[in-house]
Length: 248
Image 1 (cartoon, rainbow, N blue to C red):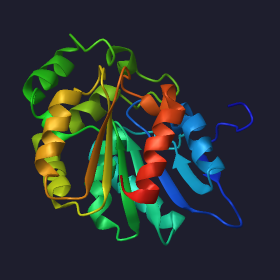
Image 2 (image 1 turned 90 degrees about the horizontal axis):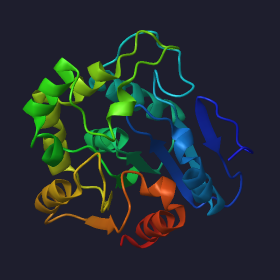
Image 3 (image 1 turned 30 degrees about the vertical axis):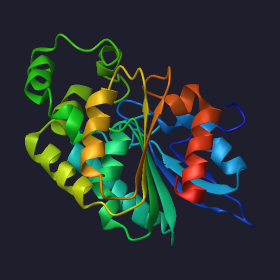
């Protein structure tokens, strides 16, 4: 969407008659700008939209150092505090969805949680040891992930493999699992039926188990892969807006 320049932060704001606030966290080795059509569609529906490129991603080259997922968690928490919203919906995609589920309980201001193909304990724990071994020896990788594991020449200190390895640390996965189990926010979880990055069957089985007595809505989008909000914008938008407005 050329009318909106790609800066390291995005603020789409209604000065009058806004319906609410949305904060968006993008995924691993990505940028919020890949989701710009979805984000702009939320804005057109009356919501203020806040998004940002994570350190060493997209336009954010301010941090010339390697960062673990725990450091990303802390960076995002500080960023949310600085935005200073009284009430907002938190949306996260992939790694951003995992981080959103990790921090949701720490912010009373989060009214609802939307997780798009989120990184999660159920999926990650099923193959953690094998995946860590594969990353350590540099091959083999899942076809959809391999292109993402190239170092960014503009940020030579950033090695995406190191970030992935920190995501698969047993201590991080266990803490994320406990945080998800404690989550009491109304939560929408969306997976693409044909997601080739995060297994949707293992993931939905996990969320069905941990959300059985909570306000969780799980949606599977047919014929979609890992980013339905990018490739099926209107369909995803309708699901998200229905949940924000009606909780279903």
